[in-house]
Length: 105
Image (cartoon, rainbow, N blue to C red; front, side, top):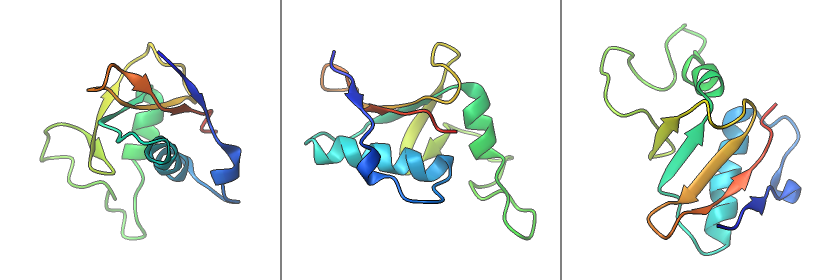
């Protein structure tokens, strides 16, 4: 299993956690793979899931709908096995080649 370091050249000033996640997905795609899932620490996932707009509505949809957590069209798996502040995406259907892991401040 190969781990790709996060490509800091993709980072932009002012990137939020969700921006870094999208850039990690992009980095995996640039290497020729398509991400099939996102792995997050539960605390980091909650930080992203709880973001609200100016009307105090959750950006990522109704909390009443339930179902598989998703972001950027990809399923999210939360696990304490991944350290807080780390991102892991991967093309898990292709022998699990993990994508970028980056501290997400």
